[in-house]
Image 1: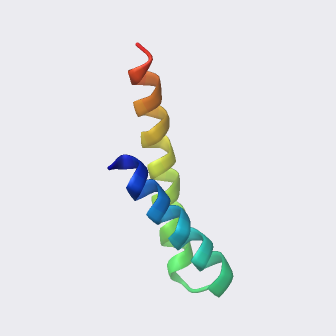
Image 2: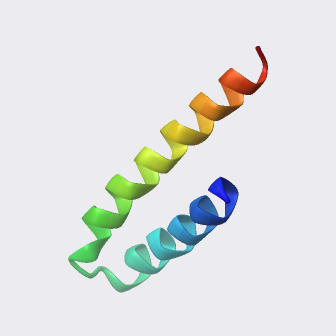
Length: 47
């Protein structure tokens, strides 16, 4: 489920870059949060 959310956020982020709407900043923040969560999950899974 985490990967699905990350893919959706990446697609929205790319759309924000292409359209240049004001939601771009919000989507960028969500993308950064999603990447941090993925890294934490990956590091915890290796233990």
